[in-house]
Length: 460
Image (cartoon, rainbow, N blue to C red; front, side):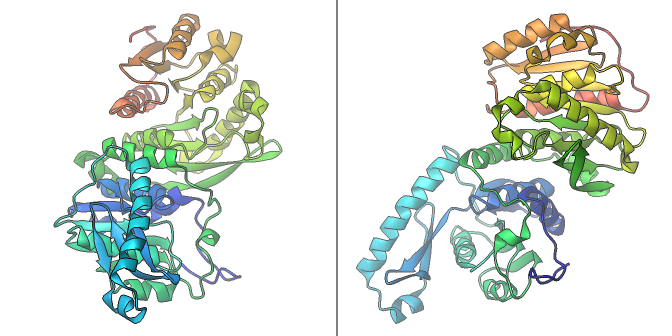
């Protein structure tokens, strides 16, 4: 696919996650070849996360800084990386007549910024070693190519045996130039002329430090085991795409992934301050996908509505929209006849429980992660779907709210407490535990012919 962004046909990615999934498909031949996926922060991280998951490969940052000629900063005379790595372009330095002291001054300034960025984003994690490995350098797009060139050179200086540069979109002439510093260049769209990276995305919002940190942490526990990778390689999704769902007068954005065959479908109801791009919910959704379940990651509010705090906590509104989305999903050909489950977080859990309490609700199972079931009110006693409440052991206030809610639920129920975990399950292994609990619960209640034991329990 390709074309001129001014009017001809072109591929347009919904967001960085979708671009990463597509790029991961193109890079699948590299799976199992001693690969490390290196993300250029910050925009490259969501793209690289999806690539790393597709290849079952480790993910790390490639933090680099270009060394610009003092009187012409846009002209690179070298680049630096972590652990003191420095790559200089002797020819440019000679022609620009830059002295050793000037090079050193530029390097000192850029290294301070490099170390600051690495500390903020990587924290105490050690940089992954590249010696003898294939480094796949990933960004969300390439414009001038200066940063990508620096990343390739620094990867080589860190000992990578092979360097592959990958991006969703880039100018064709720039890719030809970058082929000089990379062993292979992989790009989904390479038009000429090329105007701006952001033109290739419907959603090109800024990536926060918190999202980068969360994705790096999840990548550390989220590499698919060999059996799961083999399953993914042999069972491509019947449908895997961004969607828009009409709910009354608004359009809600989401991402639908349906494997073939599908054993059940789970709709994610995000909590306050979160969205379909939530790294935590995407991590759980990927685990459900490996278990043979379809997922719909959805925003129940429009971007404008998310700015209104009253809307964020309007559980009745969120529940009504979740009901409309459920009916839309049931009409999709790939989902016909499949059991539906809800995965809710925070206020999204209250919306899921409230929607499931409706007399005509066709919901087979519910999982709440750090949820606020107390916001469901009197409807809590009317929930019939088997419900699993997952709460962090250190999330004391929410844990107490869930214990009270457990007593009010009259359906099959369970309270699972994840030891030493807080509200966001950021602790090592905590989110992985959430994913395992959710996968087991949905697999036992959404699978064809499964109706649950109807035994009421309250284990922790």
